[in-house]
Each structure stands twice: as structure tokens, then as C-alpha cells.
Image 1: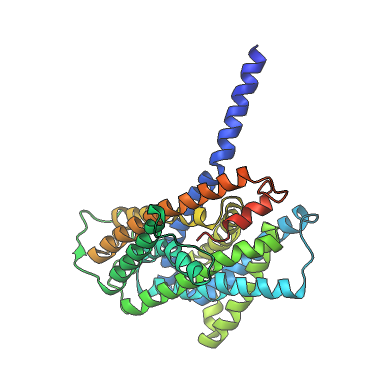
Image 2: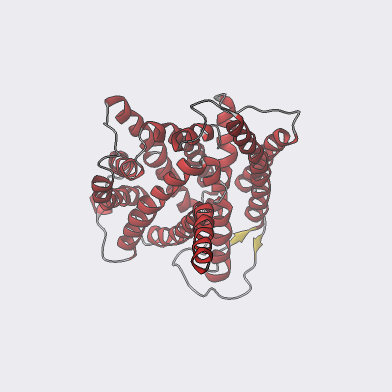
Length: 367
């Protein structure tokens, strides 16, 4: 009897962990991204070129993940055809080569809090793109369908608020506990930085949609992460050669620049991207994007209370509007998942979603 109770308790713990494992992993990714914002800002203020940083970071990520991908996915990794390579090349461009170069360039002109807040728009932008591509169906007769449309419009209104309106500066209540050189001064070219951030969020949204398709054809997350890191690093290197003509920019010392490259490569472009791919395959892209507001809150708290960063009322107001719209959209999308689940359980088709692969297909239409 005792053994049965112990076994039952162990099974309950295991089932709870299995249920909430994706949630725990996604929260850990937001913690990792939170520290990334500040270590990269410190590095950029120290003179590190953002495009050089992206190149080095993904080369480090590719070298770090390659041994794991090679040995752990030997039997799982499918044959790389030319068409699949082209698909991964485009995926790398959307997720790294183009997106991250514009994303981190915008950090130089704005602030970590603003950039982290704008990431919340990815879910809404993905929804708009999915509607345009007819991957998403809107039923305006259903309250959840109306919620998806309203949530998207509210989120985009928040984006416009953050982009076009700065407002008064929020006064710091005490001196910062940690000082990052150059982080407290007003940022010039705010509109230019805002437009760069918006463009990166659009390409990032397309990347999330494309991930689901590519994972269906190439279901090896470690190998796909390695390919994207190496190809994305090469794309960024070519781009950097055209925009950065000073050879000295490629030289980094044993300082914050080196640590930012290692942290970004090993943790963010390596471990976090792998975790996101796994969660995308298990729960769908909408599940991955719904945790972005967690990172926004963490960044805002650290930036204002710990680092003493200058905050604007426009950024705070816009971020609140974006998050309200985001969760309204997610509430509407949650209804889609329940409908898919009921239809799957009632279906007697041999291809009903009893496998992981079919679970990916069900979530392709989700942002």
C-alpha cells in the first residue's frame, strides 16, 4: 500500500512537471533575455559595434551547439536537401541576419525598456500576417473572434504611442544601485530607433510563422539552431563589411565586449533559441510569444529601480496598452486551441493529432 502511494505521488509530480515544463522554460528564457538587454547596452556604450556583436555572437553559438547537435541528433536529423538549405537560409535571414541587426541597432538609439516593450507587438503582428496569408480565420460572430481583432488593434495603438510620443520624464526616486556608463542620458534619433525596432518586429513575426513549417520538414531543434547560428553569423558578417569599414571595430578585448559576446552566443543564441524551438514544436508559436510581457516587466523594473534609467511616460503608457491588447488577443486565440482539441478528440481519422508532428500542424496558424 505504501509503495502504491509513493508511486502515485511520484507520478503526480512527474505529470505536473510535464504539464508546466514549457512554462518554466519560457520564463527562464525571459530571465536570460532580461540580462542580455543590459549587458549589450553596456557593451555598445563601451564602443562595441552592434553588427560586429551579432556576427561574433552567432559564430560562438554555432560552435557551442555543434557538438551537441552532431552527436545527439545523428539518427533524428533528416537529409539536408538544396531546397531545405534555401529554406533554412531564409529562416536565418529573418531570425538573425536581418532582424537582429536592425533590432540591436535600434537599442543604440532608444533604450532597453522601449525595445523590450516593443517585443510584445510580435504576437499581434504575427496575427495580422497570418490573416493576410489566410492562415488565420476571423469569425466576427464569435466573441473570441472579436477579441482577436480588438486585441490586435489595441496592441498596434500601443506601438504607435511608444513610437511617436515620449512624454515627460519619470523622475527617479533614488540614485541607481548600478551604473552603466552612458545609459542614463537622453537618446538621440528616437524616431529612427523606433522605426528600426518596428521593422525588426515585423520580420521576427514572419520568422515565427516560418519556424513551424521548417520544424515540420526538419524536426531536429539542435541541428536547426546550429545551422541558423552559422548561416546567420555569415550573413551578418557580409552585412557588417559593407556598413563598417574600420578594421579596428572587429577587435575586442578581455572586457564587457567579450562577456557580452559569450553570454549572447552561448545563452541567448544557443540555449534560449533551442528552448524556443522546442516550445514552438510542443505548444505552438502563440505560446512562445505570450511570455514576452514577462521580460518587459523584468527589464522595466531593473532599468528604473536598479540602474536608474531614464523612463518616459509615453513608453510606460504604450507598454500597458500593448500588453492589454496582447492578452485580449491571446484570450481569443485560446478559444481556437480548445476548438482544435475538441475536433481532434472527436475525429476517428488515422491522421488525428496523436503525434507530435500533427501537433505542429495544428499550431502553424497561431502567432
